Image (cartoon, rainbow over all chains, first blue to last red; front, side):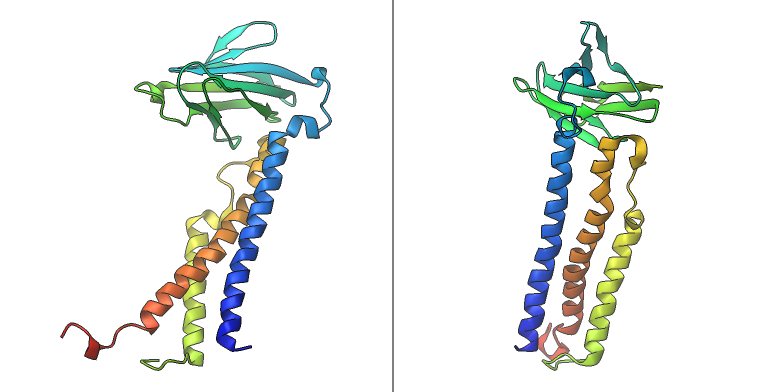
Length: 147
Length: 86
């Protein structure tokens, strides 16, 4: 085979191999993240705690299983698995915790499930990562993780 | 070098060096592929940040190959004086 042709093919298939690896790696990890609770064998309700998260202009509303509602601050236990049901009461928002690497869209009329388990106690800020109106910059919540 | 069609050994060395330099700049700009935050905070976050370095380095390889080659081609096959500006 002509050397130039070999170089051309090596470039094409080399780049394709890199991109294929990136795609498989991203898809695999995304699947684990989205299904963490069920993959870990937490199929019974007692293994995780359900929390409803409602995003609205311009605050975060957290509804705990006992009906308690808190605004902008969610306190959870370190090492405990939580299942957050995320939705929006008005416009598009985005639940973004940079230190945990998670960002989920909050869409009116839809509920998205995200799994949350934090091992290290501390305070993690929750930002809205979707421009949602004039008070968008005020929409900052706190995730407080206690031992 | 110059206007010859075929690449010489020196051309290949320069091509390789430019691609390597682009890759080094890419890695330096991205803190050598280190995740921006501590991935050990949460077991779920570990799956978010696990592919970070691989993705960053992989993207760097593709970027270095194509950007480095373009820079090299601009240099190697630039228009000679006799064809330009008039």
